[in-house]
Length: 360
Length: 228
Image (cartoon, rainbow over all chains, first blue to last red; front, side):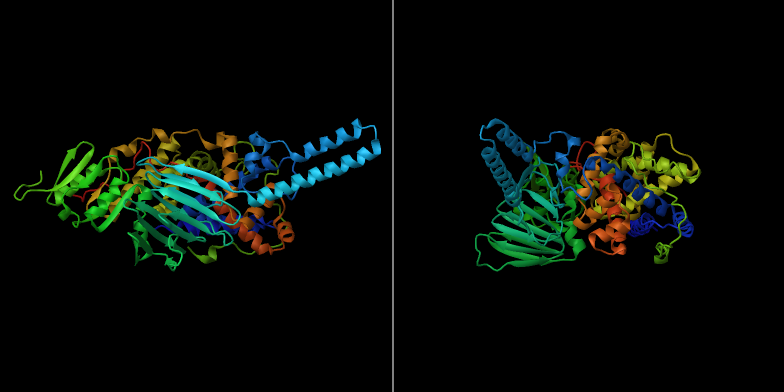
């Protein structure tokens, strides 16, 4: 019924690029019109690309006054005069120094020479300093989400991190490495490819390393750690025991670490991706033990669910649930299983229902 | 989709370029459709200004209300098709409400077709009608905001692609000249432009801002009972 939008977009973008190349003929225009007329989906896709493409010419604002050929570095925009707050330029300072020397001294020639030498030195030192600063520059940032919240973070290398509920993430990116520290909670990473700079997430004494992939790292209570890989390849390495061989996790892997033991499951990628449904605010369960399902809800809700009777842990639940609606989950569990829920303070306690009593 | 629908090879036919590229910084309102013949172009202009301007809100809405994020692109396209087709008959008075009404209907259709019948629990369907928090000034009005988004969109392109887009859109170099300067083939430049235009469109129109996933309008679509 629907054509895959990516395929339509791909063809639309080929048309746009071809037209943009110049030498566009009447015949080509007729062919383009025919393609646009073939389906409304073609037309809207083309309009959408064209609108953004035309808008992109507004970036000229940033190039104003700049001589041709200089392409600003990523993020240089922030320093553009357009966004004010530009800092003074160092060469201007050096230049002023020289002028002062040449005019103030009685020994003109000597001091002119000294002045030039000094200013050259100043320029060299500043240039060297700038180069060194660029070389050793480390970009740092940190984010924190509240209970029940999520946040999508754009990282400076083009990667994105999606932070789950109650999550803390610290970033420190240098020229040689992209380091992230998952202080708590869970985050999903869509990593921009950069073979020269490994992308490393540290958590619970492990390093999870990727070069251009998608994966999720979750810290759970009791020092548990879970890594889900949905694309590419990820390397898992213990930091406590460097002797321990690294584990390679291809797409579809779910690695669980608890009490120093590592368990790796290999699933179909779609199945693995279901574990990441939290990004849409959902939990998807298929024959999931009740204890695990409860843990999932407790990550998102202030009212913690507690299973008081360990014999309930192993009950299996399935379905799709809104993570922020644990009340609905508890209602359904009561309806389906011999379980009774009691509100005790801010906790919801699940007990085994006495035999003979039916759910209401 | 047929592959043979792809562009035919360019001819060295020096007819006048039917869509001249603006050589200057554009005004706040895109001028690109002004020179088109009447008819569909009216709907095109309407679509770009009144519908595409809400893509960010729409994308956020879809992410919030549809659990499979990989399907958001397809859903968005189908919503655009429905909206565009409706506008060809009669442009709606309030494009934004119409856009979101269409989105809600489409999601509801999809859910019904999917028949999720295991325990399926979600929030309140009625909440879907509350969209006040989606009301924000149209993007075309905010020049600075648009520029920020463009800069960010550009920064998210891969290196080479970013260079090509910059040289083409900002420095106005012809594709041929870009190829010469970067020492790559014209075909490769064209490919970078194609890819760049797609990525720019995604990031410029639909970029999701931080913290977009959960607010007042909690998603609540899939609460479906089997038809009785």
